[in-house]
Image 1 (cartoon, rainbow, N blue to C red):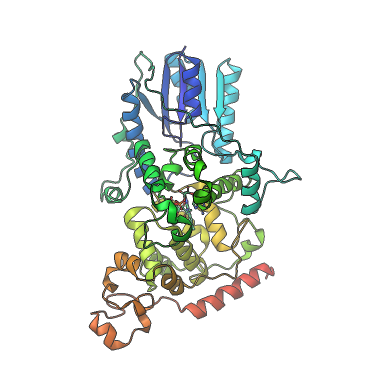
Image 2 (cartoon, rainbow, N blue to C red; image 1 turned 120 degrees about the vertical axis):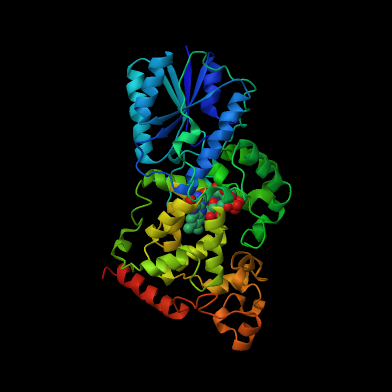
Amino acid sequence: SPSIVWFRKDRRLSDHPALHAAIDRGGPIILLYILESDTGRAHGGANGVWLHHSLGELKADIENRGGRLILRAGAAAAVIDAVIKETGADAVFWNRRYFKPDRDRDAQIKDTLTARGLSVESFKGNLLVEPWEVKTKTGTPYRVFTPFWRAAKDGLEVADPLPAPTTLDGFDGALASDDLDGWGLLPTRPDWGSKMLDYHTPGEAAAQARLADFLDGPIEDYAEGRDRPDKDLTSRLSPHLAHGEISPRQIWDACKDNETTSYKFLSEIGWREFSYSLLFYNPELATKNFNPNYEAMAWDHDDQAFEAWTTGQTGYPFVDAGMRQLWATGWMHNRVRMVVASFLIKHLMIDWRDGEDWFWDTLLEADLASNAASWQWVAGTGADAAPYFRVFNPFGQGEKFDPNGDYVRQWVPELAALPNKYLQQPWTAPDDVLDKSGIELGRDYPEPIVDHKEARERVLAAYKAARAGN
Ligand code: FAD
């Protein structure tokens, strides 16, 4: 009888344990993707763009091997039930996910089908370590990254990644599949999605090519250069990982022979694992302060300031460059993410959840675990958080990590003619320098919307009050 392989955020054919299990079982395989209607938080806009193209690639990769990807929309339990009735499938396989509402739904489906005599199996396909595999000596989950990753790596035995099948034994009978274009994942009026794809290529083949290119050069300078947004020294694998077009095991395997060079890079993969562990044990990671003291924080609800932040018009060039890079490309360099997030939370005193939500909608790789954990980290409200009193200096960070101003000049071109000395702080430029550069502050580029020193004092006082329970 046929087996169903339910694809979720694991849209690849290589190193896909659920697919592998179905192939080992023998018989026809129904390759199914469900646009789930009963999940709590709908995917963000940019994420949907990637999803569309990612499914297109998966579909083509499957067809090239003689199979067929079945697309259905609806509540997962009902869709799977219908497919079982239409095909007589008696086994269902999937790779695990880690957000509690998803897990509860999966468990319910598993229980119902098992009770009906079907064989249902789930696998570890999206993490190196399952959250329950890494615990402290007293059996509690880790709250701090370094000991988490040390413990995770200590016991880690990573099996060789599984190869992609060369052929797929598809299901012969008629089986309806939705038209991907009909799902409306792509924005049309206006089409802001296509321009993002000038910078990235979705799909499994592109993910493997990206990893190979990264390992072929940039990784050598990664430990030193990963904080430089003006250089292309990070892997940019995040959308591929978030959508499961490459597995962390494949990355681990490709790096394992060069432990010294890849140490720092693999520890970032470790941050992803840690974020998933946090989300697994704290399903409200995206909505509640990990440290409850901060629920008392008096956030400012300033729509105008929020809009200046989202549109890259704060008057701080490094922050604005980041927000414009995000808007144009659906991705932002990690160092700049930390600075823009800190700016929103600490300079504008806007709730980190508003920033998390903006990133959720604009990042191609928006990921519940990594996004929420990172926002809470920057806010200082998280598990293993940056201390609340660490307020990134938005121009100091630019001077340090974009020393020649290439990054700011790329994304804030109206300031391109300013000499480096003033580029990160245009408001300090003498009038004749501004004149010579053809820039009038307030006309061509905004004055800073908040004063750095005053903002810093204001937020420190607010944090102290929240911590003291005032
Ligand atoms: P590399 O430096 O090449 O790292 C390799 C991989 O490790 C990344 O692809 C990613 O999967 C993982 N990784 C790296 N840093 C982190 C981190 N701090 N936390 C978790 N995983 C990490 N990452 C997401 O994948 N999705 C998000 O929604 C997301 N939101 C973020 C929000 C904020 C406020 C911040 C500060 C960071 C966020 N990150 C998120 C983490 C990080 O910024 C990106 O993973 C990274 O910039 C992606 O670029 P890269 O692939 O070139 O990274």
